[in-house]
Length: 193
Image (cartoon, one colour):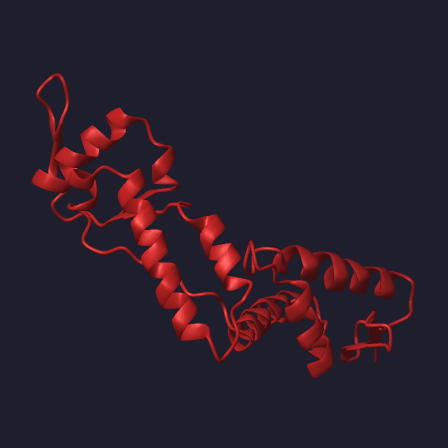
């Protein structure tokens, strides 16, 4: 498997080389040596149309979701055709535009991250519980429409793990008892036994 990230930034010579790989399933260098790519999956990512996606998805809601997704796909594919040479595009088997994450999917990602944190902490004898309102707030804090769920790990590190460490070191919570993370009325995380 080969991942080519942000393929639109590649030098034109790279596209020429990839044409041979995508066409023949092999690549021959200037010394006549051949590399076989017949059983290789090549994945290319691109940010072409990212501004369109971001603009369109700002107006996304349950009632217009399908319509906006379809229109965005068409606009991004048109932009791809204007940006990438047709002979290259014709050799690509599938073009996939990912849908934006729903609130439930974001919450699921938060739960996965928290389960990893729980597992890590349980190895140190810490039993962690997170209330539903704290989970919902983490879902909001850890998601950015432009970057998706990427900020989530930083939010968990800063707002949960770092603060939990401070609370344990200050003696405000006992690491040997179950620690519950909740929210106060100002949406600050609170830690209690």
